[in-house]
Length: 251
Image (cartoon, rainbow, N blue to C red; front, side, top):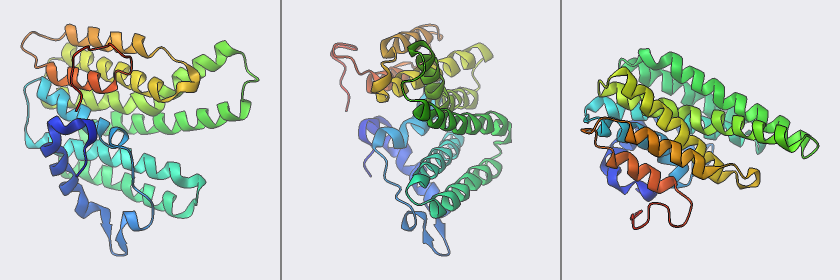
């Protein structure tokens, strides 16, 4: 299984994938028979990786981490599937809805209903971001540049950063972290998601370095005993600027 830059948690991601496989099979066959499920490793694994590494940074590696990684991955895959609707709407809508239902079932099976509200909000944010993207595309360059920049930031915040924020927060909560440390990791996820989204949306020229600097500051405010090197690895993976994290190896 290719995990791209997330080789430091290959074992955990492989376990997550194995746990999910039985839920991706229907009587008619595997979901990949009906819609293409190929994503680049970054897009495919960044959300569960953020959850796993946030829990690890706070000193926790229990089995619930894997289960909740499955939950956020179901959301990620369902969102990806719905975005295929422009090609052939029938199967992507049906399969996407099926995978979203699996997210809820997995949450129930593993006593995770405390996260239903924030994850549902993240799903709403993702789809609202898609609507904003569609409306922004229709407007083109007719709107003032200042307005387009504000909208671009909102799209990235909703489509990318919202679920990443919740992934980091859940990892910290699983570890039993203090509320202010959960808030810091939630903000770290938000800033990391903004940096990652801004990096991908090159036509908008959003301030990637600004978000990365904020994420670094979030990590510096965590307690000394926190194993922040795991989250530094996430920053190294996202950091797009030559020279940043000089000498750091990204595998």
